[in-house]
Image 1 (cartoon, helix red, strand yellow):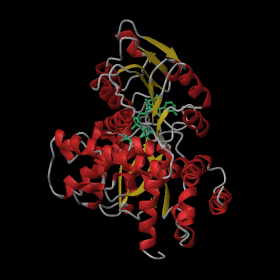
Image 2 (cartoon, protein in one colour; image 1 turned 135 degrees about the vertical axis):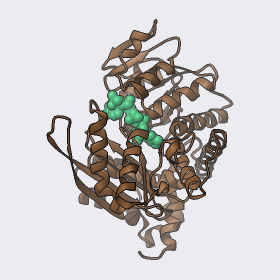
Image 3 (cartoon, helix red, strand yellow; image 1 turned 45 degrees about the vertical axis):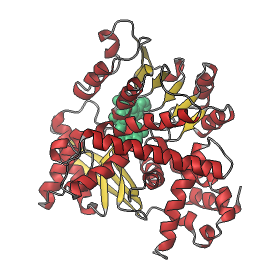
Amino acid sequence: MNPYIESSIKSLAERNPAQSLFLQAVTEVFESLEPILAEIPDIKAHAILERVSEPERQIMFRVCWVDDQGNIQVNRGYRVGFSSALGPYKGGMRFHPTVRLDVVKFLAFEQIFKNALTGLGIGGGKGGSDFDPKGKSDGEIMRFCQAFMSELYHFLGESTDVPAGDIGVGAREIGYLFGQYKRLTKRFAQGVLTGKQVGLGGSLARKEATGFGAVYFAAEMLATREDSLEGKTCVVSGSGNVAIYCARKIHELGGKVVAMSDSSGSIHDPAGIDLDIVAALKEVERARIDQYSQRRRGSKFFAGERVWSFPCDLAFPCATQNELDLDDAKKLLDDGCFAVVEGANMPTTPEAIALLKEKNALFAPGKAANAGGVAVSALEMQQNAALQNWSFKQVDDRLKDIMATIHRDCTFYANKYKRPEDYVFGANVAGFLKTASAIQSYGVI
Ligand code: NDP
């Protein structure tokens, strides 16, 4: 390994003990940079690796709220502004009991390069809380969101930091957060949050953007092998925002999704998942996925099982980090799977990625394949700034173009450095070079 990369990772590990996810994300990016470090000595001279891996700011705060029984609850809130080199901090907020500083830092770090890939002038940030929305009433969700925003609002602004949703944070939560921001600041500042409902200044196609974008990226990848989604069997993990719209677009493009999941297990439906049922269960009723098998003849629920057990041509991990490991990759490959497309952030472990590459499977990393969500968030910011509302088709067409451009940039760098089809390498180099150049241009700040 290049000594500069090695010493940078070592120093980060010493200064961030017990942040294994953050170190995993940094190591993957830095290891991709070997060939460009040899070519561009300025990267070391300007301490770019040190500067890009230290967050500009990290905010942690207490969130107190009252549950329906009148008990006082205490959670922890986070917002990491990792890099504003290319624009205001931009990235979602995750409400899930597993949220720790390590999780938020890995997500914010990934977000820097993802956002750079979109070419839309947005920096990288992420936030969230260890609050668990599962089983909470609407009133509890609202009171938590209001308490969370009562501290966070000090740090937000259209040109400073613009949060959005992530796991556990959808349009309902964004509505409560925006309402509290408006109440505290007396400003109807639409551009301060994205993922809003359309009536509050949200963009059409934002809800669909991450899932649709991942499938547009998959279609671009398949086209390079003169193939398409037509007639392909697919599995999609999760059944949240990304998973549902990923599955919908697969169906629209002629593929068939036969398995989806949530944290309780997987549903298998050989005839193809009925997404209206999944959307009703998850978006309206907020029910568990096992209910699907009671509503759809021929389908079955497998408690505790993950979707990788079911044979497929393409796999789309769309739930959470490190959910597809080496054994899962072996099983997928043995069953004939030839492409993995990440809708989630860092869902595939490094060992699994290495095996997929070795076996010549196509692999699309999240920072490229799931960039459609943040790209449409940036389009939402543009619409808010211009007091405009674009049609679904206008936004979707832009999304398609952006995903094609990201695919082209990844392919350009992969080919330039003689690593054809290495999308991890291509995405890391393309995102890093844009960010590094901006950091260098500012001088030492
Ligand atoms: P949602 O909360 O809408 O859905 C998450 C889904 O993943 C649910 O089905 C959930 O099941 C499952 N899940 C979450 N955590 C775990 C876990 N620890 N183990 C097993 N299953 C789990 O989130 P999103 O769809 O918005 O996000 C999914 C992924 O996509 C995340 O990695 C996120 O960072 C990434 N992403 C999201 C974007 C967006 O626009 N929303 C943009 C880019 C990336 P259950 O309900 O049982 O917990």
